[in-house]
Length: 218
Image (cartoon, rainbow, N blue to C red; front, side):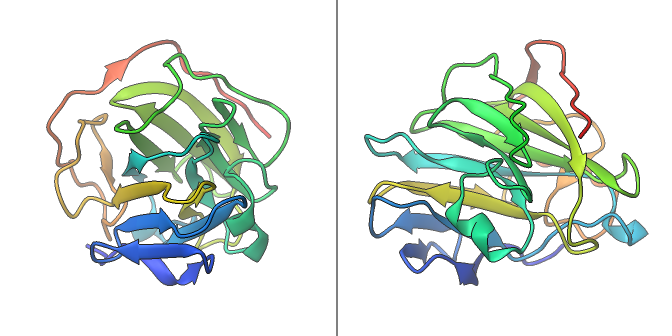
């Protein structure tokens, strides 16, 4: 398995990492600040292909309610834009309770309630869909919401796990699969840190399917 964590060399200056670089905290507020993971997933190398998932636990969220989680390229501006609100990222944002890909204006409102402190968000990336498209699915506390199909950029190293914070003391904890996941995900899905496929995920609770999955091709 890859030794994955938040990348201390690829983050906004006002994000502080702790807990072995698995916890990200906003040291200042009033601006979107982000951090990426240390390993991306591309669509070229066969050993890097599969369905990969990571979990983000929201430990604390401020009054602005503005945390986002998803995947994105290595472009610098991705770290200062909410996930999905940039042409090279996709994600779920708590601020407006939307999922968006590539800032294309097509917004999915999850069937579950807006994420709050204590919730666990799962982000699944599937790069087997085709050589030029990947698919992303978002879960909250084990409940799936939607699949978004979008063009992969910066292959073969992208997309990278991505989170953004806004208020001072906003805090999240990420799990790439080195420890058991909080929830069980579909068969064939592997931890994001897996270097080969297939691997069955480590988990405790079963995933629930809520509504039919929506597909968007961009």
